[in-house]
Amino acid sequence: MDNIMTKVVVITGASSGIGVAAALKFHQQGYNVVLAGRNEARLNALASTLANTIIWAGDLTQSTAGETLVNFTIANFGRLDVLINCAGVIHRATALDTTDTQWIETMAVNLNAPFYLSRAAIPHMKEAGGTILNIASDWGLKGGALAAAYCASKGGLVLLTKAMAIDHAKDKIRINAICPGDVDTPMLKIESEQRGIDYKAAMIDNNADSLTGRITQPDEVAALCLYLASDCAAQITGTAISIDGGNTA
Image (cartoon, rainbow, N blue to C red; front, side, top):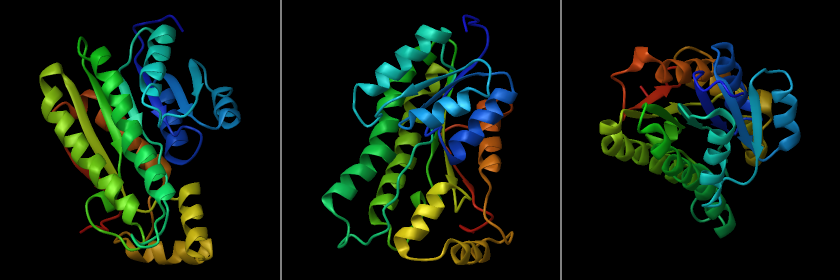
């Protein structure tokens, strides 16, 4: 773990869904990987299968947690090259039905935590450059029914991405948002349960919404992350890239 020449990626929300897929994809490409999230047991289970991988378990919605995680990464690996803000939460409700607790939690997880982490990571990326990827949503680009807090948080994340990209392009830091549509993850199952819809029925509806006839798989989002972190994407920054089977078209 003391090889400072190997690139390092920090992935939040790394205990399920897109986070797990991203961890596997970056590990396969030889990155040192820091898995971050709240579920320590699941993080440990994943880390046990991957070499040069460590975990950080904690609540990233606290303003000091961003610096703590980044300092932990530097202490263990000596550098930070890629930050993927992947953790997310959704409460399916209109503005009228969204409670204060749901609103605050949604903003804390989906918007505050990426801000805190990006703010902590940027100083460590300035010398050698780096990449920040924020997993937003197609509902950060357009409205969605029964998701007032979620849409607001993801729309905020898209514009935070663009603002940071403008500010830090001179520092050789590229910052982009990835905007998936429905993805076959545990969050999608939770969302179906909140709406009182059978998951299999929800999948049929979600597949029908896509021009390709199916929803996106976590590995496909992870592959886009890997591309955007690579030198092949050297001229891509400040963008919000949809990966939704053409749904937003």
